[in-house]
Image 1 (cartoon, rainbow, N blue to C red):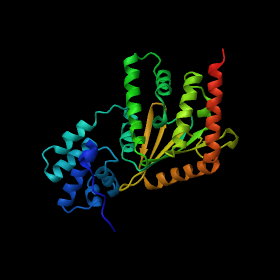
Image 2: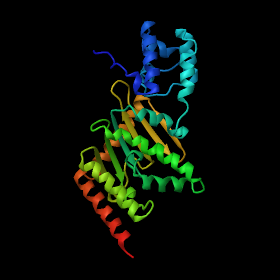
Image 3: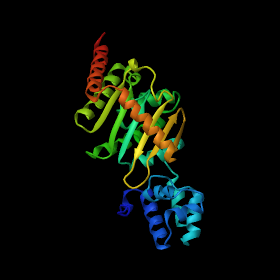
Image 4: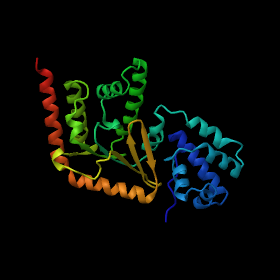
Length: 280
């Protein structure tokens, strides 16, 4: 069996920290399971730290410094990585998203952040923070749009999104904002950059009625699931739990419209919004 893919330490600070952890563990002739046992975590969790898909916590960093005699290297860099432009509940998921190979996401209410336009995102943030100063909204917007840099790569990550029909029908901002936002999604579909399905109201009850779901798959680390609700989020790595959420997503895809029918609906609704904007 081939070994793990070599990490590129220059790709991100977390990749640098993960590469050093892998190097030190290999030098010490420890397996991932052996290193994880002392911390009461699985070998796969150590693999996620090494791959840069999970954020290193201070208690783990302290243990690694003690184990490998690295003089505080891991703790110092761990503290530096805690500074994030994202809310606490989403920071680790956003960092994992940056190194994923595939993203599968069910969006029940909003166009996913990676696919949002600036005006659409601004309207969302203003609804969340109605009294925030413009500078705060601008900072949130900048962080969100920076995430979309991922999609400048023509093939990776693969993005497959299931949009609830409510995402299309709920007007966020003005009709012009909605028309632009839906046309942006449609354009990415037509460029074959993303795959989108719409879960229609007519589908009735479905497997993900409890909320949003994001699944992330990595080249050399176990998959993760991210569940988000208002002001909170959970990043899950338990294999049985992730497998259950993968089944949920498969059921959604089977219930949703085909990609071709979904694209037609998205473009049709976008035209409806455009006509609404033109009416006096």
